[in-house]
Length: 116
Image (cartoon, rainbow, N blue to C red; front, side):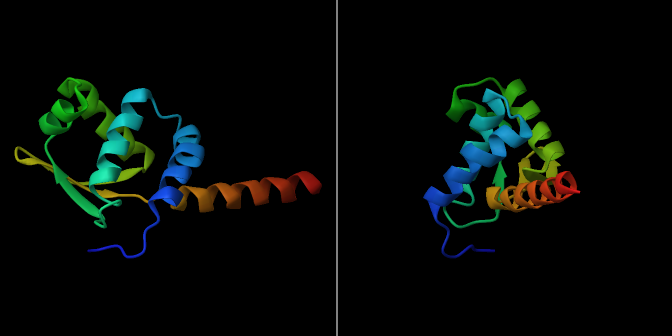
C-alpha cells in the first residue's frame, strides 16, 4: 500500500510536537520510531519489514533497547505489530497526525466540560 502526497515537514512537526510528548516517549523510543518512520511513511509505505538487529546496528544501539522500544511503541499505538518471526518484525506505522486529531478532540471535550 502506497501513500500519496505526504508532507515530511508536516509529519515531523506532528511527531515532535504532539506524538512524542503525548505518549511520553523515551530517547530510545524516539530514535526507533524516527528510524521506522523514515523507512516507511516518509518513503511512501504504510507497512515495513525489519530485523531488530539491523535497526540496532544502524542506530548504534544494542538489540535489547530496540526490541523494548518496538514493544512499547506497539503498546502505545504508535505502530501496530502485524507479525514477529525469526526473519524479523512486520509492522504497520501509525501516522502522527492521527494523534493530533485525537488530541484536538480531547482538548475540545475538556473545554466544553470546563465551561459547564
